Length: 280
Image 1: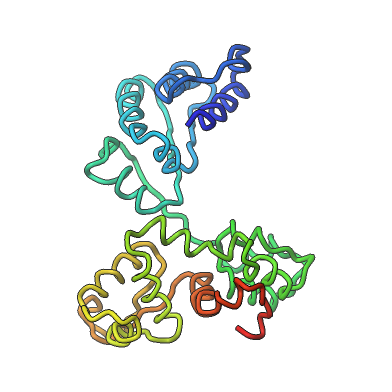
Image 2: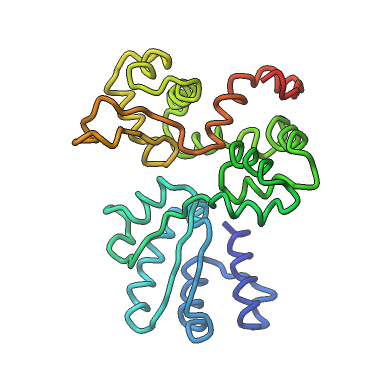
């Protein structure tokens, strides 16, 4: 928490130039936020706090502190406050949820979608359109993933260096995300692996994942849909799609689809350093 407060103080100093901020960081989030709302509103009416969930991990009282200051100051000033976070379940429950101290104070929310295919040219201008299709099939449109690849390397080398290498960021990314978001990640892993290998109907997923309780699997699939990892597809001709038995489940995120199809089942080889992608 102290390091986060130090970084926050540094950002405030860059705006105000107040000399005391060079030598002494704010001692608490309440002090830092009060100073921000009291002294900076005329200069920066827009305040953006990125990765808000991680700040709350260090100090669980932060939403309550922010709520208190917001209620005191927002009525007096025209303030725009944007809270960003990639930890979706936290943002929905602890920020937007009815039990959150901040409940009822939002004016809007945005779930940022992945970048579209045409935007990949901004990352890989030296790749052909065909190569960018390959990149999209592996990584999807998540900017943080796209930044890991370079068009100065071949696609094969990018995959080896940034996905297949056990020390690479993307090698364990889906695992870390699921462990962060979900309470029983091993069950979700089994379900996602089943879908990645073509088991797209509920009965097939139940059988492949080795889970006897059909209703339990349906509950897990609902959670994965809420996280935009899995999508349910139903024929357009169905009058009541939500009740249709013709629905199938697919992995909506390309990188999760790639990871559960090729990386997760072959981790024993990859852990030994065997990163020949042709064996996957």
